[in-house]
Image (spheres, rainbow, N blue to C red):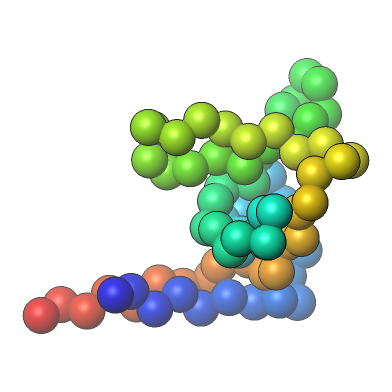
Length: 74
């Protein structure tokens, strides 16, 4: 039940938390760039889920960069 503020005008960088359309499903992931290979990955904050390697054939569209999260305290 959190509210996420997304800025569509920001350019995503490595370590940004992004809203992504991945195979027509919206997900929130951390964008990572491997310094050695230059490959990009989407990483879940939940360690139960594997990293998703992005490649030219991936159906991926980054909608924006998460800038704030509002939590309900009650």
